[in-house]
Length: 267
Image 1 (cartoon, rainbow, N blue to C red):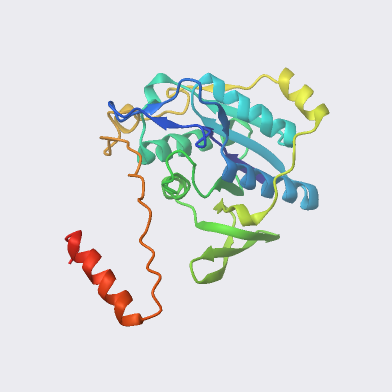
Image 2 (cartoon, helix red, strand yellow; image 1 turned 90 degrees about the vertical axis):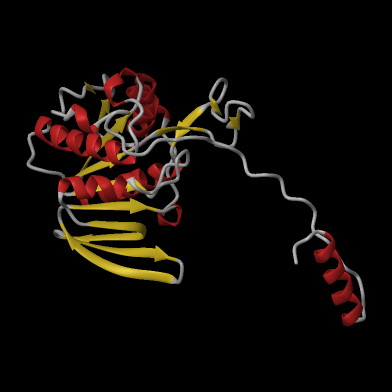
């Protein structure tokens, strides 16, 4: 079984601040981390490797420092890792990113001497953009089935059975290889990298891929290939303290509430 896991290095959103004048993200001094949902996706791949036997390959798209998360993934137990890094792909929106990663998936399969990956795993979303669009976009570009929001994954032969999380409970969905699956945090508890694995990962050479290497159409990548643009980023206004009415008489409480609403021109 050949499994590919898409991972992303993201800013720690607990440390992110917004410039109140420019309305842009202040990245200076903000640490980068392994996207948490991608860790759940990797853990699912590693459990399949442990229990059924599989080769686990990592793929990321980003600047050279994104190799840090790839090395962390190797330290956790992944077998190989590749980084798509090129200034030409910088500024890609989710549509362009999905296209780039799909092209990279095909290239990595070619480099590994296989026709295609049996399973592609992604986190349900990245915590910096929260769009949950890139995983499904990769599946669309590759023309393979997708099962999103996986809270449980079982593989028998070439059949994948997934318990999909939704607002009302769960849906059980089956698909045949090849398939792309996105993971939620309830899927598992990611393991920690081992000391031995970390030492070995530090010495690993991680191949880099360029836009030319993956045969990307330059009209579909980067800012020029992105139909959506970020116009402004801002923090939501701070909520004011609510009104508490302590009255035993219900009618008096209603009268006070109505008076307050009228005073603030809400009604």
